[in-house]
Length: 170
Image (tube, rainbow, N blue to C red):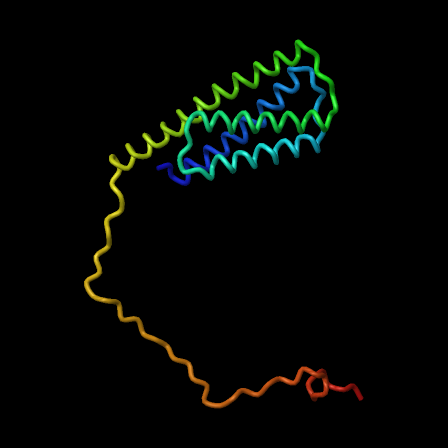
């Protein structure tokens, strides 16, 4: 069972890796430099898929590869739509290989990082003792303060018809 921290790190890794590789492969494949709107949409798409990857308690390597591939594919579609550039045959091959290598390598690296962090945390928990429980000999008798109004307070007249105010100059 993955801890919440591992799940968040997995989702952030999927989103960040997908956004970086998509932008790099897009540029390496002959794509135009994306606009600010294109970068923003790329970040939103990759963050949404990263959030989906973080929502799963456990994720297998094929599902992780699928999440990385989906984020890169949707990110590439967003960048292509925002810049409206045509692809040539050689550029598509380089771009496709960059995406495939990033999907496989990213899935292995993210999985290894998740397993490594689990191992490190479990080792740390065995080596470093946790805080000792504090024994309570008797229940704490805290004084209870009771406030009772003996008479009803007068309401302040806020309508402006009262006599309150600065003195009248004569």
